[in-house]
Length: 130
Image (tube, rainbow, N blue to C red; front, side, top):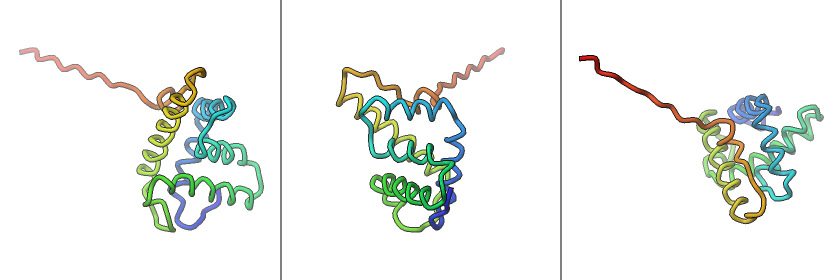
């Protein structure tokens, strides 16, 4: 992925997410369903462009960055950001987008890629023996 100037945090997280086949397949299904957000489209475009030339990837990276920055002021400009914070922003936006799509079209079943692939509940039990 091209570096747009201090976007290695974004590149690192995107490359990790692109490695999660089930997550990417669920994102692709959202776009295939006919209703999708700009963020989902940008993510899918980047995912499918991995074998493309650098200038095409750079254009798609800018589109993705602008789609994220429209919701998070701290992603505007050329500042360095934290990969974990970016990841949290991205998954929150994806969950919000799928929720919105579900409300707009209650005839289709939308699967949230984040909930289906990344969320879990941890149960911890402590037993006092005395």
